[in-house]
Length: 80
Image (tube, rainbow, N blue to C red):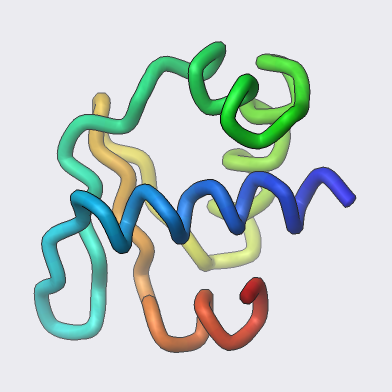
């Protein structure tokens, strides 16, 4: 499903370049949505919708070009 694909992609990016602070992971330069879509095998629109949904569910927060995974362990448990 799209949620799983996008979450897995975000986990890979977090593992590669995320900065862990107090149980949160900050991805300081989130790739453009089209690049994320290519990585996840979805459309750019799906990336936008899923990141918004993840925010509404309390998993992530987007601040400019940064994405913060608010509870990394829970995110990993739920999506890996």
